[in-house]
Amino acid sequence: MPGHTTLLSLTVIMLLSTPALQADETETATRNTVREDFSRITQPFLREFCVPCHNSDITKGNLRFDLLDTDVSQHSNHERWRQILNRVRSGEMPPPGNSQPNELQVSEFLRAIAANLDDAAIANRNEGRVILRRLNRVEYENTVRDLFNVDVSVRDMLPEDTTSHGFDNVGAALNVSPVLIERYLEAADAVLNAAVAPVHSEESKTERFDLYDSLPKWFLAGTWKQDEGVILFRSGGDSASDLRKFRAPAPGRYRFRIAASAHNSDTPLPMAALLGNFVVSGNPTRHLGYFDAPPGQPRVIEFEEKLLAKNDTIKVTPVALPFVYLKQETMQEYPGPGLHIHWMEVEGPLPEEWPTESYHRVYGDVNPKTATVADAERLLKELLPRAFRRPALPGEERPYRDLVAAALNSGQTFEGAFRIGIKAVLTSPKFLYLRESKGPLDDYALASRL
Image (cartoon, rainbow, N blue to C red; front, side, top):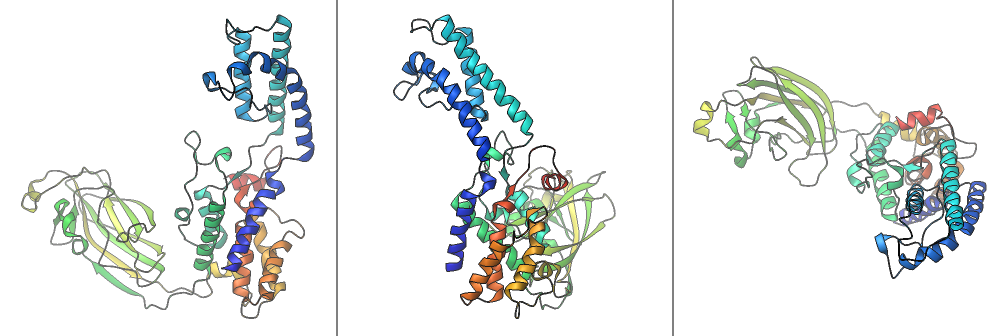
């Protein structure tokens, strides 16, 4: 698709060239001067006393001093130079038997390193800002959900985020690649498809089900059929307790009612509810939440949720029960607890008004059939402050408007042309990155972090 390829190319160029990802020129020049002075003092020492044992041919201790970066403002370089400082100061380097520097050489070398490390630490402390980082998958999904009021599981469309020290929101680890940008474009399409999708035309109806009738035969070993419903004696990720007798006739909102109680238990038994397609492998599913099934009389749990695709359904499963294999004839003698699902009821799809809130957040009050470039510019001006999580700058909408205008001039419909403009916004560094200025966080930066 030509428009898609062109947009991908423009996005990659923007990411590689944007000022948001470049150091300030003055700051860079200052650091270069500091590094030159630092190198003038330390490099002769390293070449004479360190490089002979730490080079491309010999890498004692997995260290190479011929490639050592002198920019100690970077955390990894800062720690490496601090190790060098400590080892030379202790006399561990250069090791006995090797050529040794005199006291003056050691003193000047240590003084240069210590001063540079201190200056870098003070500079970093005074900056008061974190490394520029992009949104991780979860943050991206939450952001587009808030932006367009859509329930789309886009995190599964994006590559796994690289973790650092067990966290997936560390700026230094969250890199960008052409593959990731391609996935961002696909995710943006999925979001916009959901936002402008027409409401269903299905008639709403209410159906009551016996969960036992939905269970596959291989799962029956952990269940006990009752006059009303079924008791589930085991939980786990392999639980096949989804309501297979119900398949959503269309995406939309549905009202669910579940009558549940705790069997062989004096305390409430927790149960989990999930939504999605549990038959087709690889389809995204959503964890809805946890509910308590009380002992004694059943509790009717009721909630409304959106099913995202045709054929989606609901799944309920007990929590924290052991995996047991029981024969039907011995079920009555089993003393362990179980989750009794008396019945399940589904009502929907519930009626929806048109245009939806999601549609309005894309097109506002504009009719796409008669819209113009001027309409696109106005819509973009309204979108950018929400997308960039700050007030838009004067004229900031122009590059995106120009993309829409070019697509319209090439013969595309307004819907197709405006989609290109929105996708450019959703793949812009200003959307994908949390950009924070020096000093205390303003309200917009704080809200973005939260």
